[in-house]
Length: 218
Image 1 (cartoon, rainbow, N blue to C red):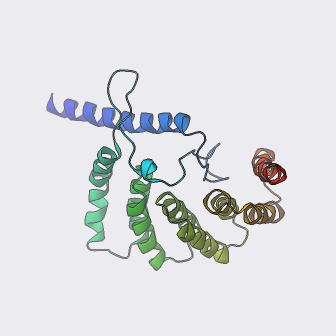
Image 2 (cartoon, rainbow, N blue to C red; image 1 turned 60 degrees about the vertical axis):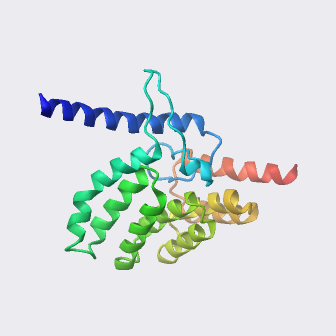
Image 3 (cartoon, helix red, strand yellow; image 1 turned 45 degrees about the vertical axis):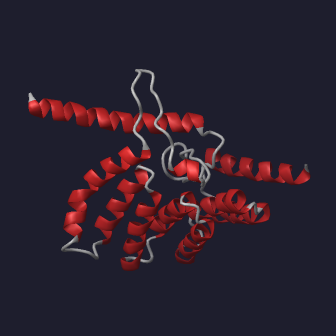
C-alpha cells in the first residue's frame, strides 16, 4: 500500500536520526558536555565547536546501511519545519512558533539556523531565560564562543540564580575560553545560589571544579 510505504519510510528516517545521536554520544564522549542540570537524567555529550563537528560524514550502522548526514538531517528538519514556517508568514511575531522552529533545527545540528529563530523569538520575549540558554548552546556549537557567553550573561540578568545558565557559563568559559578561574566562579555561584540541587547534580558540578583545580596544580 502506498500510504503504508510512506509511513514505513518515515519511521525508518526517525529511527536513523535517533541512532545517529546515540552513536555520536558514544564516539564523542571526550567532547564538551554543555547541557542542562534540570533536563533529563544526563546532559547530551556533543563535540566542541569545529568545522568537523558541523559536517560529519555519514556513519555506517550495524545493519549495513548508512546514518543520515548533516545535509540529510537538514532536509528532514526543513520538511518538519515547513508547516510552522507557513504559519509564521501571517504571524511573524509568534514567539512560540519561532521557538518550535528553532528546536527543530537545533535537534538536527543546524545550529546557525536554530540560533536565528531563537534570536527572533527573543526579540519578542527577551526575558525568556531558557531560550537565551538554548541560543547560547547553538552559538557555541557554531563557533561563536563570545556570543554564547553574551547570551548566558543576558539570561543571568533576568535570573541571576538560573542553574542551567550558570552551569553552561562555566562550561563555555572552561572549554571555549580556557578560563578555569571564570568557570570556577560561575560554578561556585551556582552551588551557593541553588542549595536545592540534588546530590547527584551537586556532585557533577563539584567533580568539574575538582578537575579544574587538579589541572591548575599540574
